[in-house]
Every structure is written in structure tokens, then in C-alpha cells.
Length: 369
Image 1 (tube, helix red, strand yellow):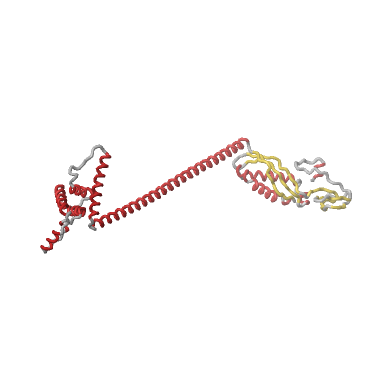
Image 2: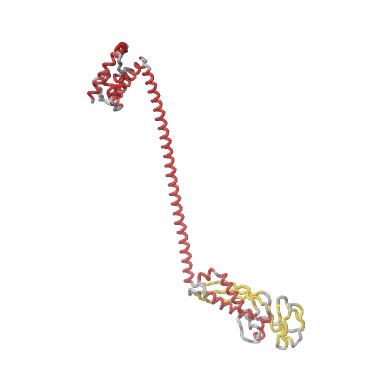
């Protein structure tokens, strides 16, 4: 049975080839990319190639006309259930081409209808193995699997399936609404994560900035203190060197035995003594003044007791040096009486004045002890 039976009132199929078969007029011209199947006395005789063809009237008959071009077959919408029990409504487009006109004519009653039915069943089988998410994500893989399954089944039909494309996928309204909520929740989650990451990075940057600021401030303060300490140390050193040099010069001047130096030293001590009491008078209304201001020995002893806890011999030695008199501890005894008499005769006139002062100094030290 072929298209002739359909024209004579045979059973109707969805993809029936309704074109009118050409008549046998002895001479026919076959179009390009078209194959005409000729039967002689009801039996397959030959396939007419494109171009000029001759046939015998009443004996030869054109039974089938097959197009060798690629054709698109629309797959009607159908329902399929996924692996997670979601009912989907899908439709698609199937692209086929006849590669063997003889098999396409005598291997199957209607090749296009058979392929379309095979595409529908194969699509249901493939979708049943996937979940909804995989169906939406792996459409290319699904199309490849359906094409491969159709080609394996249609080898004896003389038709090859070039590709299959799923055109539309319709999910139930509830599933679509759930998918929309899922997408919204996912995007909200991403936004919150990005927001929290931004706040975290901002807090880290602020903390790092504060840390660097504190470190730099501490380093600056440390450098400032080091520089200040170095300056103070250098100033103290220079001041000590100057003081030592001044003391050395004063000591050398005193050791030289010059009377002017002794007078200048006495005058300097007196000026400092008076200046100290003048400052005390300026700082307060009550001033404590020693009763024996004119007592030089007592004043020297008190000064020595304030500036250092020295022994009596050291204090007497310092007082003797201040008065330019050699103390008794420093006087070497002589065995020659004449020589001692010469030394006594050579005493400086100022010794007569300093001896009472030293004696009074000794008495003051003993009274304090």
C-alpha cells in the first residue's frame, strides 16, 4: 500500500504524503533531488534518475515519488514525566533526509509518520531518566540522545535523522511559580552574600588602616623620643664637658697660687651666697637666715655638708684649698728643727687669718657630729 491507496480512500495518517503521482506519458522529465520509483506490472522495476526518462505505457507505473532533500517534520506537543514526577508538555522539530528511496518506499508504510512516532516515544523515554533541572540544563544532550536513538531504529527505512530540536517546554503553573521563587531566593541569597562580603572587606580595610596608622604613629613617637633623648644626652654631655673644663680651669688657677684668683673665688662665693638669699626673699614673705652670717667657717662647713656626705678630712682639705692653706694632714713632719723653723718663718701672712677659720671649721664639724 502506498500513496495510491490513500488517494482511493485508504486510512488517513497524520503525515501522509498527499502529493499527486505523475502519470505515465512515455516521456517524462524527473526533477533534481527527486527519486521516482517505477513498477512494471506491479513489481519494482527501477528508480528514475533526474533528467529524461522513457517508460512503456500501461506496463510501467510511477508508484512512489521521494524527495532527497532535507525536510523538517513538526513533532506535535506531548506530555512527558520527569524522574522527579513533574509533568512537562514538550514539542519539537525533527530534520530528516531520504538516503535510500527503495527502503523508504518499501521498508515502511509511511516513513515520516513512523519517524515522528519514534521521536515522541524516544523523547518520553529520555525525559523520564532526567530530573526537571537536568531537562532544562541539558537540552543539547537530550537532543543528541533522541537523534541517536531514532537513527538506530530507522536504519531499515532508508531515512536518516540529521538532528532533533526541542522547541518549547511547558511546566505546570505551580512548578513555574516555585521555580520563580527559587530563582528569587537564590538571587537574594547571592545579594546578601555579596553585601556581607563587602561589609567584611570594608571592616578589614578599616581595621588594617587603623593598624597601620597606630604603627606609624608609634614609630614616629619612638623616633621622636629617640631623637629627643639623643639631643638631651648630647646637651648633658656638652654641659658636663663645659663644667668639667671650667672646674679644671678654676682648679688650675687656684693651684697657681695667684692672689687675684683667691680674691675672685671669695668674691664669687659671696655673690652666690647673697644671690641665693635674694631669691629666697623673692619667692616668699618668710625667709630663714642663718644667725652667724659673718661666720665664714660655719658657712663653708654647712655648704660641704649639703653638697656631699664627705669625711672630716675631705671637708677640711676642701676648706683648706678654698682658703689656700695647707692643712695639718698634708704637712709633712721634718726631723731637722732648723728646717722646720725656716718653714715657720716663711709662712704667708694670710695664714694668720685662715688658721682661726679652720679651727672654727673643726669645731663646727665636731658639734654637728
